[in-house]
Length: 293
Image 1 (cartoon, rainbow, N blue to C red):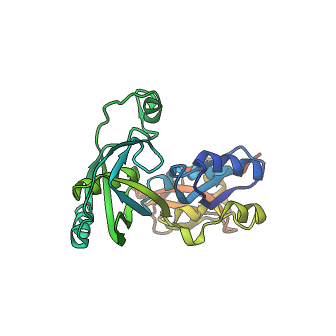
Image 2: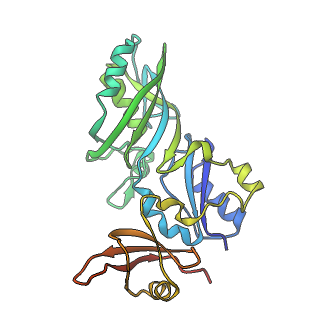
Image 3: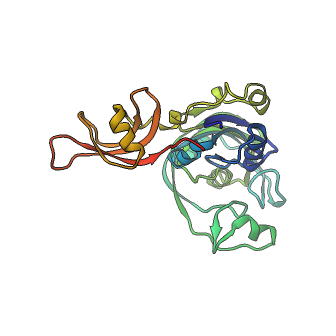
């Protein structure tokens, strides 16, 4: 059975679930998941986890993300992008480039953002887009997001293109509308490509055609997603104990979450290093990737 990750270049026109279904059929396995949903109209990086590696999705889910987005002035839609129904329009004067840069820069830092109605956020166990499709609007509480960087790439008569790096849960459609309001214009997102999720970059992503033609070569090892954790290697006895859920004494320096490898340099899983009353720290198994049966 295939285990690992694939850095997929999701094409526009497919949902993230469509990509998961494609991978399931291609590899003939059921255990497939993704980190970070992309809107159907958007393209870009969509990390796909296969087999036992699906147990590591949570370690990428909170990673920051980078996007390149196009914003178009003059109207707003029910979805926040140019695929929705126009609900308002107004004439506008092209904002001065200095004002555009100032408006973009004003979003750097922690912000409050209200999730769009056409989103998968759940209220009372029901997804917002289900309310929206039924013609209902419900009250949504603002959520805290962080914009690490945002920069103007190009500006033209009817819109602009910008790059942004942001925290999990940031809706770029909402950000585009908010930028428009900051510039006293109506605005929608008219193009979006995700260029990075954590340490997975657009330049290394693979199209569905490339994946189908190189099924095994495109799979990355499961520990690829854990670059933020230091690595420890255990001897055979301790590795066996960890696999069986037991805590071991580690004759070295270790503290916090770590990637664990056995004496053959095979990735076992994630452990927690802690110092207690003894001379040496211990490692306790947190998530062990046992082989599929």
